[in-house]
Length: 286
Figure 1 (cartoon, rainbow, N blue to C red):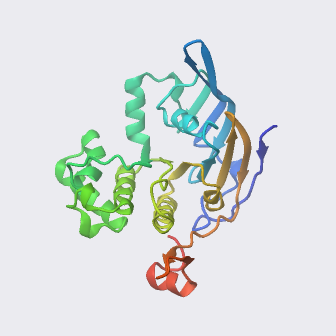
Figure 2: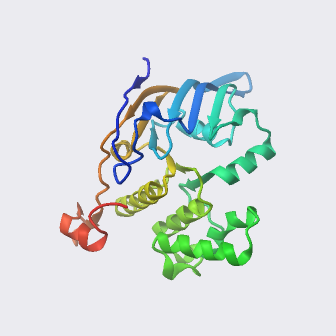
């Protein structure tokens, strides 16, 4: 089955997303006939099979598919963590499949951030030190990187938890630290690999709302891998994979608002009312 591609038009930039007509903008990411084959003994496993894809600046792209569909491999290809067997990958004007490992490390440091399902925080370090770490690798001085890390932790709602270590925080708080760390270098692209996979529904909605809000505010391109089809309604672009091929590539002119939830005394989970959303968080995302 061939890929289904739907184009769209946006008239403005704001809470609705990236804006401008997709057809009239230069993509920030272009994949051309990308194939990845793993050789395991005498077996050749084709994880990606001729994937071609354009992603535009400021888009929230959701890559979905069941286990084994190739979505994590595709994320690794785009992020420069693995090289394709065949095909071309152009990101922010650079052909990354031609780069050696040291060039790729520098490219990732300057252009991308990562949010992981398992948080990947350093347990012996505070939230402040964890967030400041990428800035240290970029050669930023101690006072400046701590100032930027404090600002980022405040932005994700952890002003009072800066000196807490991961074991002293909940899963949702740890993921907020992970988001702050990923965004502290102001990357052009944020990769999120099942970022809500280890969280309950309430915390998942809060974390997703936070990621999307900050990326919209900054104009950061967000690429999220998930097996959860619910996530598709919140994205600007949805890429569905099956057996290493793009089954669908659709765009959504009006992504759904991310409604938060609460748990009642009897254990029932319900969405917050408009009044509760307004009182606690403001009606709309940034």
